Image 1 (cartoon, helix red, strand yellow):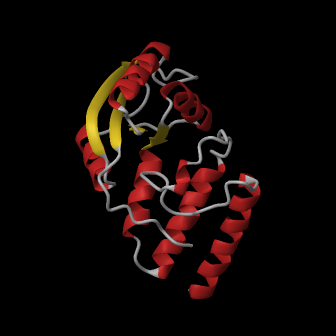
Image 2 (cartoon, helix red, strand yellow):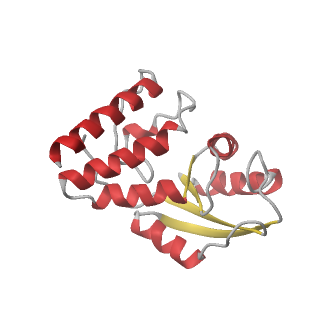
Length: 183
């Protein structure tokens, strides 16, 4: 497996920190630094207050529409959320925002993918990415941005014409076997 090294100008990004009363608040400065470490060009960092997460968009329909307008007006390529999103919320947000959406976990995995140097380290990152991707398989066929790389897309490659679940299952097994052999 080969990792894509992105040393170009960072992707235009909006960061979204969501303060939810029933969830633990995360440090917005740490989140901003993580995004910069991944190579994001941060155009805006929004903070959203919610009593509880919206089941469809996490942030609510009105705020999602507001962010969608900013995405269109500023040609944003990526929106990163500080809280964990369900696969359905991630897909719903991608549809309304018309750009890629990742959460903190995807961001951290991308940073690890950029920095892994040893064979064992690369295998461990790949396994973690495959585990994370396996729950996020239902994507539109038009979302093949992984072919050009970018934040949240570095790491395990794939065959965009094949079945995603069988590819991930195969890759996960192959990576585990390789990790056992290198230990």
